[in-house]
Length: 144
Image (cartoon, rainbow, N blue to C red; front, side, top):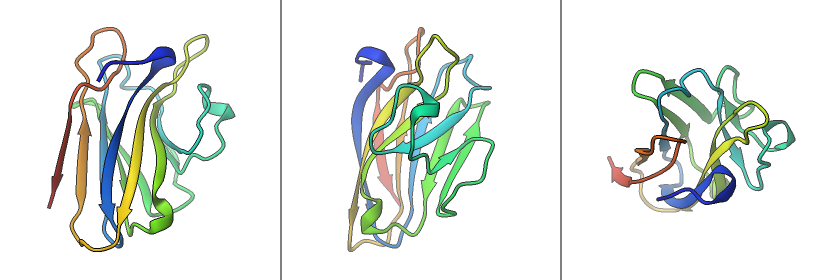
């Protein structure tokens, strides 16, 4: 999926199930290993400090312990996990990479659907193969 304007990629829909967990893996290019990664919910600003709803970010404890982030800098992939999914978790999320001004943060939109009846976990991997900025090219979904 190519980037649209302002460093925002096309959206990916992820389906999870009430009571189980969902993992969202976002890959990034070399050079972003030391940048802060975060997950924001709903309407997110192109500038990190203007964004209000950030359930989890690298380097700090999440407000809600059901949300976690792991950044594997060797593989250049950061993974957001939401455990004990609830219907109210459904909605729009963004995988974000915080960049320094004057550059805007880089986002990948995730639409999370929460279904009621399947106790399996869902994993989605968002891959990046561009050479100029992080982007999303493929999405694979597996349950198990």
